[in-house]
Each structure stands twice: as structure tokens, then as C-alpha cells.
Image (cartoon, rainbow, N blue to C red; front, side, top):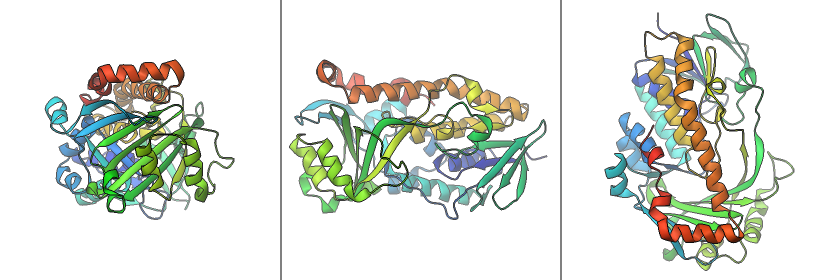
Length: 391
């Protein structure tokens, strides 16, 4: 009999899991609590370890149509504007890692995956189906949605993000906590910017207790900008006055380099996100729970300082499809193998992302040491062979 696989969550991780399973000939059902598929946020960086997987699904032409492939990553001092270091991408990434380095709007990546899943035709997409209850026994998992409908499956994959409701049923020892960092995000048409501010490269600005990153998206027509600062959380973590964001951001970055100030001044509307985190994975037991597995942000949310949140979810998706397609493995054993395969790499990425945040926001003597090391060893420090070559 055909294995029944149920995916909870229709974001990037859930759609990638459906696509990966379909590529292995495995039909799936996907439930999404929203009445329509949508994706909020700004831009995403996709390093070669991720682009290689997307291209393996035959998505290179679709990626070419909406993504950008910056030739260079440059790091600058947010105070002086001076170049600290750079990493060649483009052809070098292809030669070294077998795939390109891409930047893309989150909504474009989500739509790309959704289109591919629908074209593939092996996933039943069930919208407006909020998860209400989950239980499992030795033979199956039973999922109840808010409309009272019950579904049984051999395995259930939790891809419902940082605030995962499925995780509440299998892991109560870890909940998201505010990280002490706020992310101001915006996208602006490059045509609306003075020519000197338009860019086809990734630029990171490092300053004390903050950093900013900008890069092209939407085929190069838009510029994505994110500024992350250390600050207190809003009183209401879910609702606040976004009209004040531009003023608040300028106060955080007062006195920075003219080139950075010019970019900030050209953008009038910013959306604010408090960044939350959970403890780093400590073992396979935090990913697999009998016939239920967690993946992506539901399992291992990451601070964005290594640009791997979406990437690790896509890698998880491939690993899940790989184990679920092995006939000799039972369902529980398959999920246990997934957990054993993925937890160390995800934990390593979580730790490296946190460490990067400390380096990016360094102050005092540490900041001077960081800048000096970047000038001396820029490309060597910026390249991440164990990450970009793995997956």
C-alpha cells in the first residue's frame, strides 16, 4: 500500500518537502491554515548548497527568471564606509561548489516552489485547514483540523515554522524567546534610487551593535535592505506602529557612513520584526518523535547571520524524501534516520549563525580586531566550504 505522508505548513519548507517527495514518486497531502498561499518577508540569500538542490529539481529556468546571481559579496565598515573584505561569487562559486550563489525575494521563492508542486501533481493542497489536535499510536498519526475533519497518515512532517503548533504536541521543552535583536526590512525599486545607490552585489555593513545587508532581488529590479540592531523588544510582539520605524532606525544608525545613510534615507517604509530563537539542537531526539518529524524553523530556527534559514529547510526536505523513499525502512526508522542525518549539521549552522551575529555587532577592541582580520583574510573568512559544499 502507498505510504500516506501528511505535511503541516505551506511555507518554503512544507512546499520543498512536497516537491522532494514528489521527485521520489511519493504522493503527499499538505495542510495550510491560511485560506490562500502567501509569503511575507523580504529577501533570501541562497548559497550553492541550496541552489544545487533547486537545480536538481529542474528549477534552474524558473530561478533564472526571478532571482539574481551577484558576482561579489563585499563587507564594509558601517562607520567609515571603508571596504574590509570581499568574496568573489559568480563563476567562482560554480567552479568551487558546483552551483551559483543567488539572492531572491521570499515571495518569489515561495511562488516558484508552489508552481513546481502544482505542476508535479503529486501533492493534494488543503487550504484553510488549521491544525487542532494530533495523536499517534503504533500504526498511524491522526490529525484533527479546526473544521473537525480527521486524517490518518503513516508519517506527519511539521513544517509550520517558528511558532509551530505541531511542535506543541511533541516537544514542550523549548519555545521561542526574543533574541535581543530587531530586524528592519524593506525593498525598493532600483529605478527609484539615485544611480549611485543601485547595486548588483551583496554588501554587508558592520557596525557596533548593528549591521546592515543589501542585495538585488526580483531579477535585479529591486533592492532588498535589512538592518538588524540590538534593542529592546516592542511591548506588543505582534502589533506595533510601523509608521515610526523609519525614525527609530535613523536614530539607531546616526553617525554612520554617508553611503549607508543615503540608502536608508531613500527608503521611506520599513517593516519591523523582532528576531526570536530557540536553544540549538542537542540531538536527534529533537527532530523525530515516533511517526512525527519536525523540519525547518519548526525544529531549528536560526538567526539570519549565516543566511541559511530557508536553505536548511530545503536540505531537510531532501533528507526526508530520501529516507521515506527507502522501501526497507519502516516509517519510524526512516524518521529516526532523518534525524540522525540532519541534527548535527543544523546545530552547527545554528551555532555559526549566532557566532556571526556576535562578530558582526562587535564593539571596542573586538571590533578593531574583527576589521583588521577581515582586511587581512577577507576571502578566507567569508567563504564557508563545509557549508556551501555540503548538503
